[in-house]
Amino acid sequence: DLFDRVTVGTLADRLLRLLEQAVADPTRPIAALELLDEAEQARLTEWNNTHRPIPATNVVEILAAQTTATPDTTAVVTGSTTLTFAELAHHTNQLTRLLTQRGVGPDDIVALAIPRSAEAVIATLAVLTAGAAYLPLDLDHPTERLEFMLHDANPTLLITTSTTPPIPGNHPHLILDSEDTQAELAALPDGPPDTTEIQGDHAAYVIYTSGSTGRPKGVILTHTGLTHLYRDHERHLYTPVAHRLGRRIRALHTASLSFDSSWEQLLWLIAGHELHILDEYERRDADAVVTYTRDHHIDTLDITPSYTRQLLDAGLLTGTWTPPLLLLGGEAIPPALWTELRAIPETEVVNYYGPTEFTVDALTARTSDTTTPVIGHPLDNTQAHILDKHLNPVPNGTPGELYLSGPQNARGYLGRPTLTAERFTANPHGTPGTRMYRTGDLARRRTDGHIEFLGRADD
Ligand code: AMP
Ligand code: MG
Image (cartoon, rainbow, N blue to C red; front, side):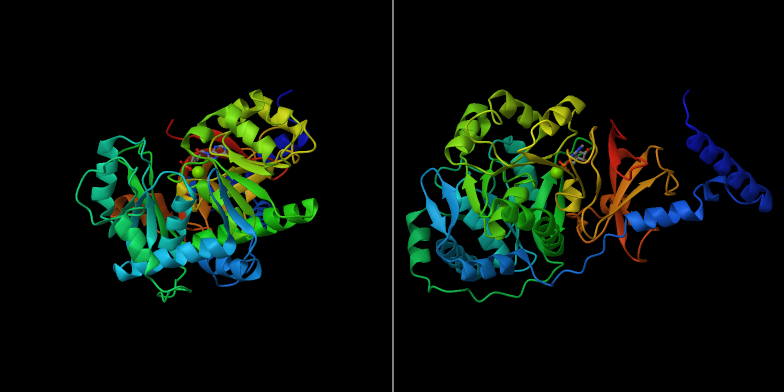
């Protein structure tokens, strides 16, 4: 009753294969015996063959090309401001000049303590354009944590605003909206700033992860990672969705900028779509988010399953306007929610799984793919490995730990070589010299090829 014929046959075959190898060479450690046959190994390799060459560029250049193509189109909408792509570029370029004058360049870290606003997006883009990496500071975090992050990351510059609560320490800083800064910015020449060329392995941002397993650690993510995430999404989301709807997409920015999932939303802007930014109060109020979505005909939101639950209860998918696309991620989608979302054919729902250490997303599935929750299959150019404790692939259906490899892998933890070596290990299943990130998540590959998330290994 427990096993079907095929499964029992496979188990018997594996046992025989193990015994044959053991008697052929009794000195071989048990962990070195091959459990999978050649056909199974070939299927795994094929499944991970996600290779797709992409042009050597970066999100800064992609946005610049977009600005040239559609300068007068609306790029950013906030409660108080609307910016076209040309206006966004103008402000970004001026701030970039100022940063460059202050000596900000490749592999410098610039901390951002700016309340959610168009200015926060401009500052983010300016730091990237200057070739540096931004470190987002969440102003809601306890002072000790902000102090720790600033001490640990030692940023070249800290950008704040006059409404930012005081930040401890005496880091060199720039008050974005002060009269002095505004005068300085206004006096700068217009046009694209003269910056160092961005290299793929330059850091783009540093994000501190929760540190539930120790003290917080800054993950260093690169331009290469972001570019690959962008190209995957361009192929599977931006282009097909814009084609399906026959127009530009209106995306709602709700995530805190101190979470990497805010890229899920910023990338719509890079792709030439319209980004609506909710302020700190609006984004926390489910009714306000639903009302905004309806009033502004928002096409897509990127939200956690828990937040989705709240928004559904507030009527997200039952009003006069239904967003055609929802992106979910950050935690497992409960089976009941998966089923509920499948029942709404007008709305396409995409599940994204990924740790901060792998540039936002590594695996993806759509609720239309299967009747039960899965995290699916790897993004373009990403490989997912489900391994046992000896780093051997486990057979389909068997739980193992999930490892990720590919260009979206982080550079490592800031100033933590030992921890980096522990979590980013040599990759025995890929190109020699590449590394895998050990996620600490348990997963299983189903016979239909989709990966199922089974929780944390270190719960
Ligand atoms: P963070 O580094 O803060 O983005 O957290 C990453 C962790 O969140 C992953 O290692 C998973 O444990 C969990 N997670 C993220 N996305 C998903 C998802 N779509 N389904 C299940 N768990 C997820
Ligand atoms: Mg994440």
